Image (cartoon, rainbow, N blue to C red; front, side, top):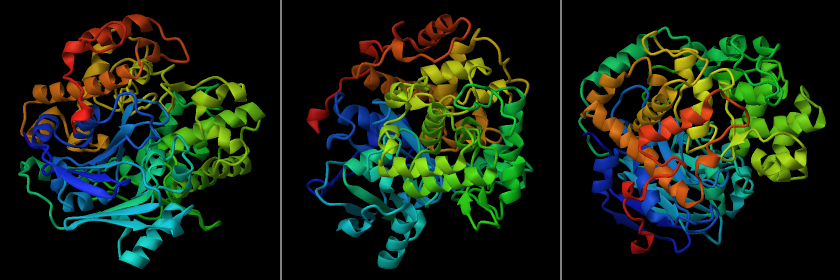
Length: 559
């Protein structure tokens, strides 16, 4: 089986010491990316760790496909205990950093400890350097990039950094790379901020060699010649249809469709797109560099989830206003989904839906933890009672779009996801709109038979996140192709995916998560039955816990 190659580099920012560890057994069993990050975190991080404690580690990792030149492979993974959900969580970022990371020669990099000074860490194939960067305190993403360019001749695609939100421990702060790409969900930027690390850079010429089958060129060629609508409109291409079938959350989830959808949807975004945008080695080029000529505003995006969170959910019908919210989140370093939902909750509490100026003011206050922003920076689950609104979150994570009240299987997938209310964990919405062929499509209504299918989709996506291959390859990388690329039997790959999901669940079980956390803020027909069927398909206990004999011992003290 193809897997990532190289040692684990551990960087202790408290002692400013580094060491390398042979993790070939982990790589051979868990491929790379999310799988390797999950296994390392499960075995090395204390179950009871506070997310902001020095003992919480972040694990950056690539997979074998970052050693190819295939489309859909410009991504990498970061894993740690989330300050938003309190559980073990992996976040996935695109852009151009993954191949610079691979060039440093490591399969994974662990950042642990806590520095007394604000640091930048420079990781190359020649070693690790620590730089005190007190001058970057409070700097935005673009300001960090400018500093690294001016002082170190480093490009933005070599940098992972946090903005003010990460420094201020906003619970949904992102780690930003290539300025506009994000390890977005779950607040891992706040974990990096708690360690007083402003930036990590990667580079070198030590990329190992992995033989990837020639089918990679077939995928690349098809991506380059496709006329797929996502090449023009990115994920916003689904906005109109989601609105039509009533799966577009609106005015803080009080409605399922938005009368102003045309003003923020795919056509509106495409009108503002002024050039092609892509990730490393990808010919599909579905990213969205946008510009408003009148105001001079430039950003990348917004993607569909941002259109929902800062558009329909906030009652905003002008794409330029959503672009501005998107740009603020990129600069300050925040997840647009969680931030937009939190702002929408605030608008609901103030009866101010549609007030774009208030939206932008509030985003800035959240990043700086000023005034009401200090409350909102805690996330919906922690502030909804003070605001007097419903708690639209699962396991502490705010909802993305593709509403489960319409797409019932996606609703179940929101509940079971170890990450919380995240649409990409199982990506079940694609089957129910559907965005797949008739042979894979499922009815939107009801949950009959969907529990085991959610488990299968979660397993499949765990493999993609470990390879690492973009989820939007679904029309180009089928099961057979995935197996060929990784030189493995597809059923064996699904078994690896199941082990990854199970390790996440087991870690979270030790932190108190169980069936009571696999819940939704709305009712679905036969939900309890489907949930039990999901557990049964995984061989778990009916209380949502992993049997003790499924997971090997946890021995972080042995490190």
